[in-house]
Length: 88
Image 1 (tube, rainbow, N blue to C red):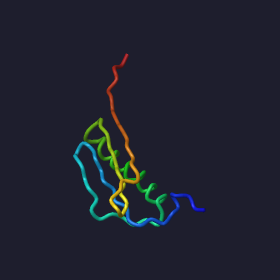
Image 2 (cartoon, rainbow, N blue to C red):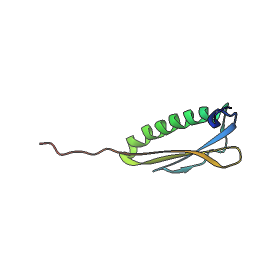
Image 3 (cartoon, rainbow, N blue to C red):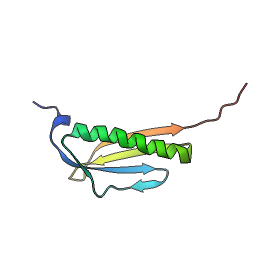
Image 4 (spheres, rainbow, N blue to C red):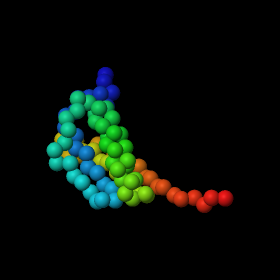
């Protein structure tokens, strides 16, 4: 029996929340498996944080993944902060 992540799924939508507000994915991307969509979630999360940390220095990025039915089936979240520390 195939693991749930290996089941052929279809189109996934990646909604992003960060310091710039919320962005809803109206187009989605097709993936052969939920595991492939999960891999993409990790990439999207990293890309968004990489861009956000240059502007904000601290914050939170959340990426929610919806399936074709509109149900949130995955979520990735990263908090980030850059601090200046006193020197001795």
